[in-house]
Length: 474
Image (cartoon, rainbow, N blue to C red):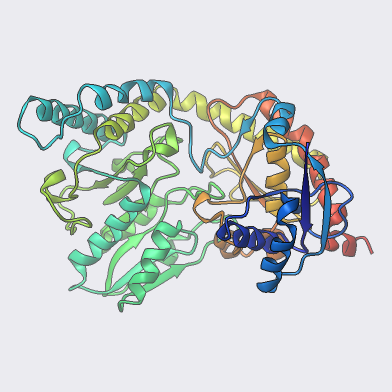
């Protein structure tokens, strides 16, 4: 084993900042669960080679980050550690999902054989165009839309940007007011914040303790200037499903375009644009066993919207750029694959999720559910473990071969507490110990048993190091 140096810090945030400093300086380092016996501080240590010790100390202290302690001893390489942990368990399906083998199989010919540009008039191009239109029909049928209402994009973020900026561009002569919720994905929130700087007014509506928005609040917030309502279908962190059809009814009565970010719900639960009655809906393939880098925006026929990306005449002048033919084929195949067993898989995932929640609560005290107890995605469980930091739990579970997250993958590098849990009125001290478990089709009862077996010991060890937990005991 190679000899390494381990630096400890008072908080996970400081450890994370120190790692960023070393990464910028191109010094090889790794955040790991703090080995037993390394003194006080958070449950994470920064590991790096002994030869870099003096340079690391200097760099970190220059940035006013105090190192609690420095230790040196041999430590096994990552490959050795992975051999010991056995089967790896993935419980982060709300971040992304593995591409289904049938999806990959469907895509491959469009890299090798049918590789033409779908805008070309020759046979290669016509074959690609034909495949795209067949895929469009399948995707439209999956969400009960018409094929001409589907516009292909690069994924959920582009679809959200397209919906919001496109409506704003087409409707801003009528008004400059947007209504959204305080728990939206940053692909919506940050667009709204940018529009505020351009003179638009945005109303961020509150949610209750379960993360639910009240449709009455939507009605009260509408003004003569309101040109868009955008509320997510299901929250990516807590899984709470919003009353979209009720909000849509209010929007229709007022003649206001209504967009829903359904990136987390499509493929997990049945989604029908007809039943939801929305004007625009965003979806992304990689959230339900399709490829990354492709998604779609449903635009109800007759909805006035400007294009986000201009250039050629692709997608009937609605989205310029050469179509990602393999990705579009993969998206359509993913819709087909998940539709076959959605109800059965949802029931199975819900049973596993509930077993995980019950098992952890029986073995660990001071654990709280975040999100609605019933109106929730069947695969999603967000729990807060009091007196410790979620990042420390994530790294300790990772050492055991178990992958979970502290919230949205798009903000996991941020040191800010979850805006979703803050909006729900949860105590910041409780928020910091939150974990999101998001299950998928390949998870088994054995996986759940393994987590229930491993996690209580990790929580106990981290709490022993926690000043907050020690204060509670006094």
